[in-house]
Length: 123
Image (cartoon, rainbow, N blue to C red; front, side, top):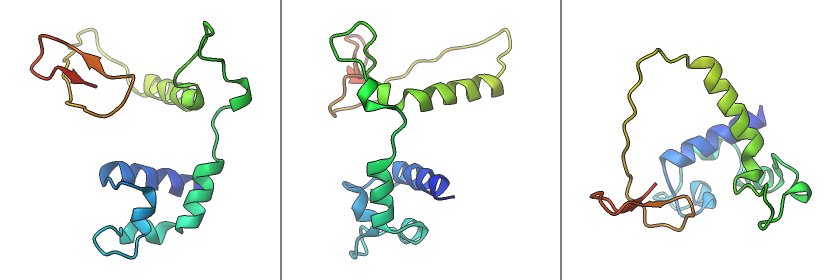
């Protein structure tokens, strides 16, 4: 039950963003989220956050190797999601792909630069 609550809290944190996860449990009314803080204590959330691993870090390929994966630490979760999505979504023969750029100024190696787009850098 705690794992599901932990994942639920993370999803909620993606909707209401704060600079630090501890802010959701803050004593300051502007930062505190009463719904999240009632689901789990900040110490419990922090413990799960620091101890939850999806992949073995010892087995992680080094950056210079041919089989290096930037998403290695969450790869089992991504593979499970992909299998679930594939089982749920059965597209018809006619598909349309629409692309869009979301403006992004943060640091990420996943962002793209497209010179001829109105938004030059994005995800």
